Image (cartoon, rainbow, N blue to C red; front, side):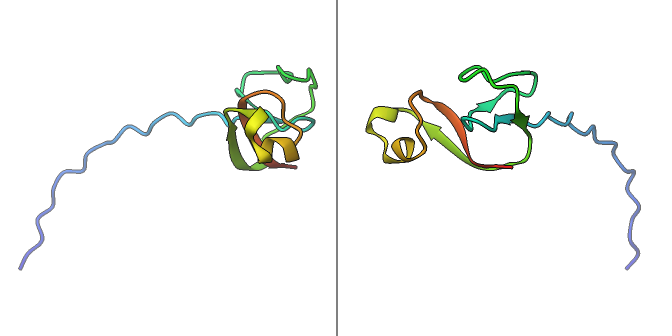
Length: 80
């Protein structure tokens, strides 16, 4: 059986999204265009982080209490 050669389609690759940055002080996940943390004001940001945590109600969250989080938002568990 002979294989048929079909014309190859060119597929446009999606634009690569910039990596979110994380504040090394409070672990808040920030948009990639920020130069300082919107929560604590620290400019020491990192793109090397692991674990994604969303805190909705920090007053009733044991994890938020353990991580000293007072505001709802997106946080990283580990920041390097």
